[in-house]
Length: 326
Image 1 (cartoon, rainbow, N blue to C red):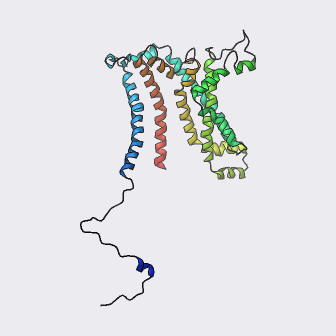
Image 2 (cartoon, one colour):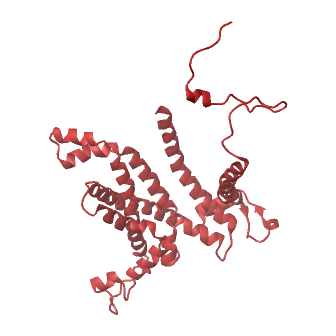
């Protein structure tokens, strides 16, 4: 029998031996729980309440609109709901004189937004990406209309378009009796007047999207292009712009959605009358208007939903495919 006579350090001698567990007491095993019961309840409430509200206010209402599109209901009591099948859609496509002009105005809205404020927003983003002086101030100024409520934007532009004291008529001398230009009341002008206000807001939105895309461009690509002798325009056209393809896809989808859901500006201007009809305005007038044709208004909402899904679903499919490949 040998005895351990090796010297022990004072630190080792100071550490007491482990105390044996008392009889009947279990030694804790397994991973320790990081979340207490209170934490789990808090997380459940934080995730559960928004989920319930989202399902109730978005998904259930959307499904209810689809179901009501095949019925005739005046909104008074569920017993008055009558199944009419495709009759609402037949009336919508054949008997409603406002549907096709409203759909055409939505298309015009999209074309104008994609041709005017989108290139302008790209131009502003390119200039601000050059790190000029007071860049943050310019970004704030151009993005401010996006932060403002569309209703407030509509009231501001109503003052600009006022026939008597408005800024535009005062500048061009059309604020005198007999020379008034009614930008909001004239059916040949009011849609374009609203589109100017919408483009003013949309430009800042596009600027931010493109500015974010430009920040992701590899600086070495520009340096290599400069070494090859390319000027600024050639570098942008052949090197920078092709790398903005994901941003262009987002811009296209966002612009289509903005064109389809346009409502606030038109409603503030003249409630969608006299040449400014939109699908969203027709939905509102039929559901909460004097007619209370909820089934008919839901049919228009279903048409708008189908058009939106026809744009969004291909975008989501392409995005998921890129993520799988990555």
